[in-house]
Image (cartoon, rainbow, N blue to C red; front, side, top):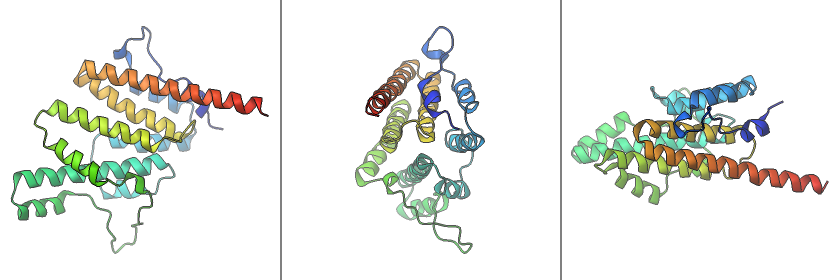
Length: 225
């Protein structure tokens, strides 16, 4: 039996003192996985690969596309599209159109049909970048201030995570969403203390809001039999 209700009710887990910089994602993840089934631990480990660097190639994205976790499918698709657009935008800023198209084709990760038949047409369309998304991201990638660029990109990702998990309460995707945001918080606590604290408080408020809303829902359900 999964302990989603208890895990989520205890988030975020803070070290003694309660200071923002005590936010320890590795420790929180360890405490979460200690209460999860082996299947959910594997789901967490796989999902967190998106945020931990390394080469996320076509095989990874194909595997993510077939994940039983809806958030994993949606966010991995978003991640791939954003990186592909980043490659294309950089190439077209630096090179001629012909050269840019060649580099884009070479370095983008596409899940096109192949002779081995391991491609399945994606069905999760919510992660598709719309025209407004592409326009905003293209403008963002042209930003010369690196900190501003990274901040805007992480805000975009944070908002997308929220939109993908609007109806996820006390399930594995709710936990994955917390961990995804936790990675963003941890990164900003290292890059910019002020922005890190802002994201930390935002994460705490969102977790508390989710729990309080659903605690009320459960109370109403219980009272109504």
